[in-house]
Every structure is written in structure tokens, then in C-alpha cells.
Amino acid sequence: MQSSLAVAVDLGGTKVDAALVDDTGRVLPGSRHRAPTGNGATSEQLATSVRDAITRTLTSSARTDIARVTGVGIGAAGPMDIAGGLVSPLNLPVWRGFPLQALVADTVHVTVPDVPVTMRMDGLCITLAEHWVGAARGYDNVMGMIVSTGVGGGLILAGRTVPGPTGNAGHIGHIEAGGFDDPCACGGIGCVEAVASGPRTVAWANAQGWQGSTGEELAAAFAVGEEIAVRAVRRSGRALGQAIASAASLVDLDVVAIGGGFSHVSQTLFDEARAAVAERHQFDYVTRLKIVPSALSGDGPLVGAAALVHRSEMVR
Image (cartoon, rainbow, N blue to C red; front, side):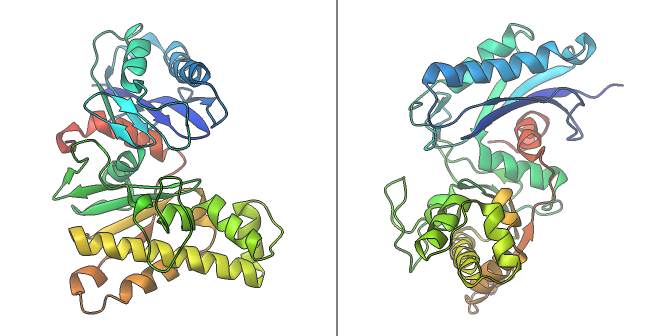
């Protein structure tokens, strides 16, 4: 018997991906397609990119594969309103209260009528993927994190997702880390995204006199021991650890799985985060927490979006 398939859509600040994903978490070869987004795009350009990625995924797939589609999962940058199917990504400023779920449904239903469409924040989707096929397998109290252009996250507690009433629960990038005064686009001060995301870590290093411009260059500088690069990575790891410790104090977690491009800058990022958590030494339920790197490939966001369909029993 052939496995069922999900149409998976992942919307972020620089691109939108679409693919068919089976019920083992495997992206079907040749089904993945991408289109650009970006904070300089118009609303119609963004909508066109979403439609283009999905349409290419469906038209490039065999009819027998299309017949196996049982649902659509969307992971999107937040904040969002899941009741209305609306998104307002901070890094896509022309979309405020945009009906992304309806746009995706209208596009998919041309080829696959009537299949259900589910949307959640990308951080929650990543958490589902880590729990399903990644580093959090076997745990029921999980936070997944993305440390990249931004910092996102999601929660699974007692084996069920926790989206909150609007879909924005687990948005750890906007927990304020103590001792930092970096302004955040959300309006907060010292949010972990404003301190520890790749671009903001690079910006802090630049302000100290470092001359590079990318996270990859910062990683290379760290690897050869350049002082400012080392300080920048340690600072970001500290902010991540403080936010994780705060989250664990609140909801009692087993494991935090961290992925995203900037999470690969250095193992020291993880060491500093773990050290910050270890300072809560009076709280055994916090210090027992494991902080681990993601076990997902670059397909992780799409696998997470597909988990909204294939692991629907976990999705609130």
C-alpha cells in the first residue's frame, strides 16, 4: 500500500518552499520548488511566489502522487492569527493580516479539490519535525528553535502541540534576555532575536570593530580565534541560554533542539547556552534539560509543515 502525501509549504523572510512529503517524513524527489520573498517585495509579488512554488510542485508531480495527497500543511513566520488564517511576519512588512491560508487553499484546490489546509508558525512546525524524525524523538516535552535570520520556536507539552489561542505560543525569539539592551523590531528591548540571530550577532561584532559581513565569515573568524568574533558568539549563546532557562522554568521541558543556519556558527554557541541554563542550580527540573543540535536536514521546515497533516493527532 502506498503512503499518503502532504503538500508542505514553508514561508520565510527570504523564500517560500513547497514539496510533497510522505508519511515517513521523506520529501519526494523532484517535488521541491522554491520562489523568492524578501522584505522589499510587494504584496502581489509575495502572493505570486507562493502560488508559483505550489503550482510547480503540483504540476511537476505524477498524477498517481497527486492522488495520494490527503492534506496541506503550512509553516509560516509569525506572528499569525490561526483562527482567521492570517499572517503578519515581522520581516515581510507588506503582509499584515494577510490571508495566507486562503491563498494556499485556493492554489492547491485547483489541482487537489477539498483537501484540508492547516497552518501554524514555522517554529511549531520545526518542533513537530524534531519530535517526529529529529533530535527530540522519544520526548514529550519539547521546544524546537530556529536560530537564523531570526529566532523562532515552538512547544510540544505532554505530547501535544501548544499553539495558544492565536497560534503564537512558543515565540521564544521575543523573550527578553536579561542584561542586553539591543532594540528589537517587535518593540521590545533585549529580545533574544535582537541579540542572537545571525544578522544581529554580525551587527554587534561590526559595532565592536570587526570587518566581516556574514554569519559564515563570523564563523571563520571564530575558528581562528579572532577576539571580537569569539566575544560575539559567546554573547549570543549566553542570550539563547537565558531565554531557554526562562522557558524551561515556566513550562518544564525535557529537551530543546536548535537548528537554523546560524546555529552552526560554533559548538561554543551551545556550550554558552548550556552554561546559562546550568546557573539555575537550585532548579533541578531546569538543569536536567538537554540542549541538542537539530537532527534535521535542510528539508526540516517542509517536514514540519507536513507533520501538521501526518501527525495531526498531536496538533491543537
